[in-house]
Image 1: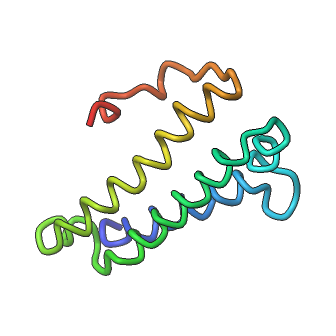
Image 2 (image 1 turned 90 degrees about the vertical axis):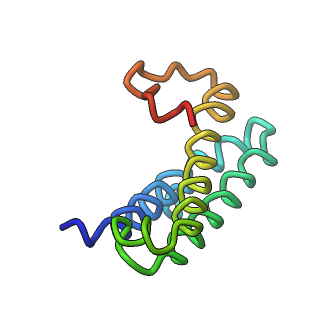
Length: 110
């Protein structure tokens, strides 16, 4: 199971993109555009593209890549964090969302 960590990251990114875009129907991207936040909406798509590319660049399981390809793993972490920060900070603020306290974990400090 440990060797499938990259597949899980790719799958999570794909799933989030489907939720964000609506998978062909009205999604959060469309909602943001409808309230005049087209720049933010498109920034999320751009950050998702970057996270997808970073995930594709890590060719081995993360537990191996963290030792052999630390630069790509660090880039993947950074790119995924940019997506989550946009969601938890920028989009949550624009939509006046109250995030559950569980979403603010100790991993958010880096």
